Length: 64
Image (cartoon, rainbow, N blue to C red):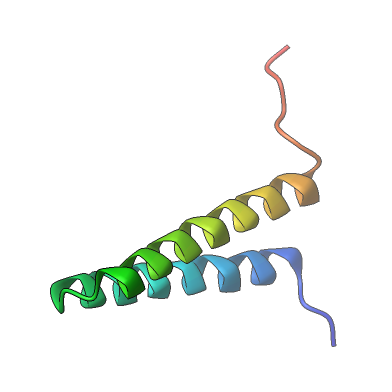
């Protein structure tokens, strides 16, 4: 069973959201090292998710 590209994208984006939420939780507890790790990981996952979808659809379409 293979996954569709939008499913892979959704899993990556949901994982990034959960990392952001965990990062907010750790910031509240003043555990800044873990907070920064979570936020940087989430930004990396967001970047990977967007790049994957751009690769899947063939890039950004131009209006010309």
